[in-house]
Length: 325
Image 1 (cartoon, one colour):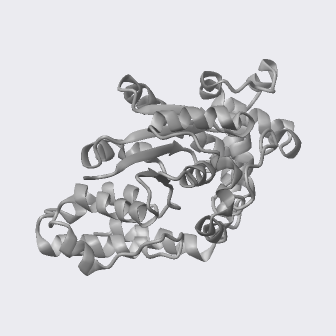
Image 2 (image 1 turned 90 degrees about the horizontal axis):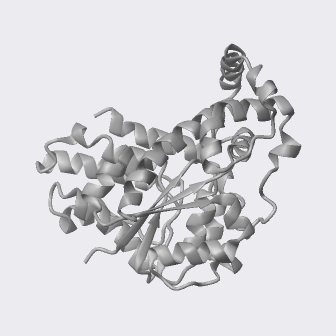
Image 3 (image 1 turned 135 degrees about the vertical axis):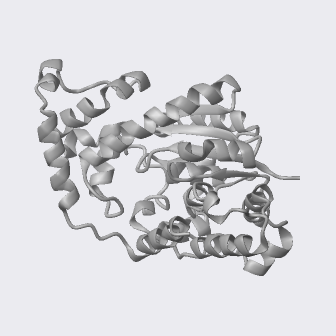
């Protein structure tokens, strides 16, 4: 019997690693550090068709394992090509991904798996088809803090404008699924700031939604050995071994200038209002923002040197194989 899967809806730099490791600290939930294996594979399955032919299936498994084995994050378990070919019937995508995540979950003696992926909204139909019965948690963060974090990170190209536009796109896409999945009560929306301020209340809500008992995971999640090892894998995860950083919000007030804040609010205005984030800029100030100037500022942002860590480059290279078939 396949184990329960819970998928995360979350923009990058918005607490995705924090909530994944909080979940991982629960005695019944496995929250593996992401391998980013679902999005590139689901979006490119057509390149390997027909998948029920042994040669195509073998090529797909090889590319999947090439991506999985990148030293981007660490799991308890590993896989071999022979193992997956022997254990999974040729072409059975459903069985394949359940097997992969269930092996890691069982390897940690857990019963459910909390899965983080990039732009999960792109693969919701695939998840619902191949990994049926899944639930979703939608975590949203203030776009001004998200953009500040993006700007300071060496993982992402561009600065606050690229970040704000990504946040806006992501919320538009996630909100579509939030309303659809909400009809079936398959999704729970949380705010990153509430997770920091009202941790007990939000965790109780989350665990109730998942169907497990409450545990004080926020007290010791950062002490887990595998979590500590993964925190050293790349700069984006460096804070997950430091515990819950209660003051990690509204830093944009000190670290972004008035123009930067106004630009983010201008780009994200409608989604911010719906999600309850209040603008700090006045309407007259926002109305004077020049879209042409924003585009030029983004062009300059994206022209700056971009040097992501080797593990990120290796991960990007491994993903590219799926698009070249």
